[in-house]
Length: 432
Image 1: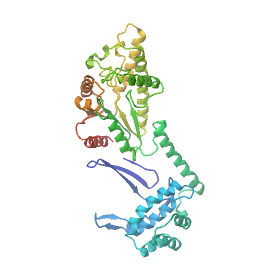
Image 2: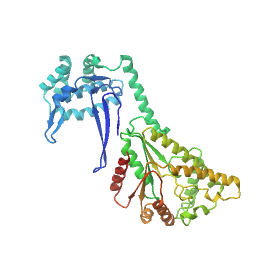
Image 3: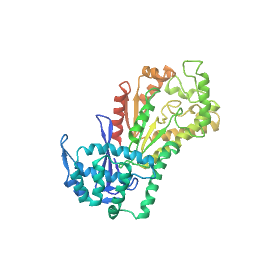
Image 4: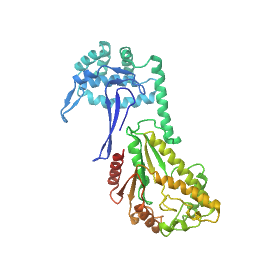
């Protein structure tokens, strides 16, 4: 997976299967430095850095000479720190100190002066000498910035006016990305996308199988460096459409009101517990449940369209549950099956309309479906409010669930959570 933000710079992301961690590499074809969100100076120092490289004793890996690295570090942070942004200034400075203290132990003042004079000039070398002899403060970075900029301007990519405008535009776009992630929830990539193309991953399993835990962990794992888009296809605690929200609130109030009356979960608008999967459509459908079913089907159709757009734009789409039409009446399947043979033409049409949505969704599954295989006894321990009969039935449905033209894998959740998550990450990475 790769993406590029600036010319001469490519980002690669890799996966370490043994530890379950992502590795992010900035590959520089040219040494590009500058202010945040701009990187406006393309310097000719790359060849010098390669010529003066050394081998790191412990790993025997080529690294840049610490004296050269220290000069670059001081210049980079002088360009990043701003007087008008104290919060950013403090953050940049704390990161700087970590690198500075590591490098200063491996450098000598004379070599640093020679490097600075060769790459820049004596005026800059004099300023850096003061910053190397003792820990530099913020005012010294501003002084360094003043003497460095006239020299770096010859390597500038943009005109002076654009150097002022572009950072604000790019920062605004990044801010929009955060707003979109938290509030708007639109399929718009704002960071990095997958070079081979987007991928859709769905988790299915009984209550207590860990769908939400896996979805949240996977989202945190990938969103570190990649644009993701999360979709909830259930009818419970996840994101709901405005049309279904009043019914959802009503359902929540009803469930809370009946919670103290029974240790087993009371029926609600979205509950379906028929004797077996093949008789799921034999239940009667009341008015409220019908409204619930129709708004839910419409909601899932819209969510599927957004998920497809996100995938087409190169985003990684993570789905909590996924609709199916093999078993009507439960496990995210159609709820109006009893109306298929109704005497009422309107009811038959409504059932057909809802069924058509689920049929289409089932025929166009995500790229990867992960079945979380959980024994009903274990699921009961995690979700004691769910009847055992329902857990056993849904477990059998998950085992028999099939989607065409997609990769399906089954992962046992009876092992340690870290092992489950590592297997999930490996399967997802293989699809990416």
